[in-house]
Image (cartoon, rainbow, N blue to C red; front, side, top):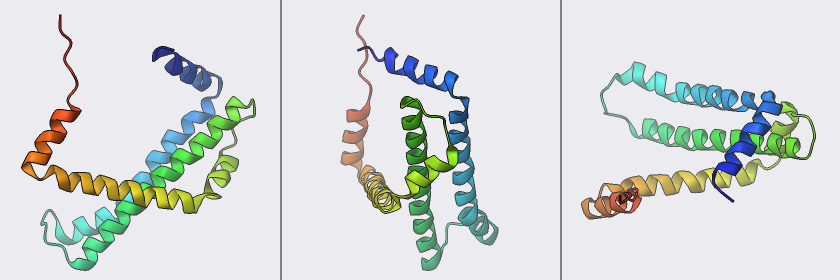
Length: 145
């Protein structure tokens, strides 16, 4: 199967079920609200000064985890809706959200795991040799003529 086929199927599903376009909008709104809840008060208090107290650093860490959970929950909700569409059922945003929320514990564990892995990778990239190796490994191969 070529890589084009899944993209065509995805666009066909979107053409037939325009309500699925609501999910990226909801995800963006949820992420904006979550980020605003911590970023705006910190900016108003400190401006661009990087001096943060321990409690503020903890708040940023909790917000980072919360952002990961919100993103994971929104993705799970969209997957539930797409699953319904592929089974021939109509898109019901509320029902999809309720189905995803039934698995909130697993989604929270996944969010913590992914946030921890991302933070670990970011810290490893700061080590000069490790950062160079990671950049070399992720570089796209060039095509020879």
